[in-house]
Length: 443
Image (cartoon, rainbow, N blue to C red; front, side, top):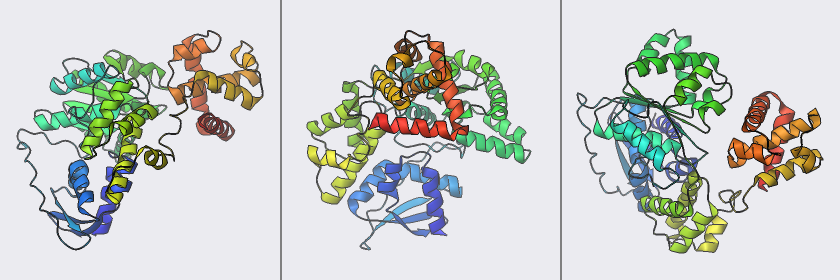
């Protein structure tokens, strides 16, 4: 039983922790015992145990509670057989009469708090709005729509609102990714329980939805979400949504949802500056118990410029290496440790011009023809792919993309992006072409 429970717990944690975190720190643990009130895990060594306790224990407790419905004591035993130091007793949360219990749908990463969010010019506005939503739900920035590229902190801010709400214990909330929301609603339709689920989702004080762009083209789900959204707004509940693009740029999203989203506050996260990246790396290294020398911090900050999750992945690898070897790798060692992906695409900056050239070469047309105003299908399709890749690979603003293609309007770039995005799921040849171009551009 304990083996299947542990597998289920790891699967649940995949929704809130990075793959590297699970692979490096949680998968090596071996479940020895699961009882009504206790989970005992075998750990490789004391350092490994310390990192798991500091970084992942709270998330493990939450996941165990979600699976078992009970508060389990999680204990550790060394591989050698000697029991580790007793686990400190967790601080009790406010009584349930005061603390509204979050839904089992809310699996929060314990590191995603406002205290751990490094503020810079790239994120000050969204962070301030998120904090306002947590402290005074429904009063301002409602709905709050946070947009930005991959790995810039959208999920961190969303879950920080949940963590703040949980700590204060004065409001109820549900935090759920869109793909999980779709599963819940589809199951409710199937079991004829939609009224109950609708009531539950619209009865909380704060509803936190991650990656709303996943609802693109899901008409029935969008209709139901609009009903929940409207009901919650009428009760002055707070709604916070994240997406990798602004509302009107999400393809096949109902116009009335776009209108409702834009009626609130749309806040954009942008890539962090070098100064902010250094602060982020220093903060996350401290959470891992790593004392990195300045030259290693500068190496990471200068080579990983647009994705904070890659920084976390790099630090996890360095921490694992330090655990096994007993020392922090030097610059050459870090280069070797991270050469299989975390630096790829970061060392050589991808530009709109580079994308245009690669697409023109692939389709064997002149770049002037690609950028020109010829409207033959043999030219329009490569042009649309080039615009799509400019948005996908480097998150260029639509206005910049249009301007780079002989001064076209931003609406042309939006149309091109949507056309290719909608084509790829059903057209194998187009998908293979785009995949080949992405590989060539990043190589």
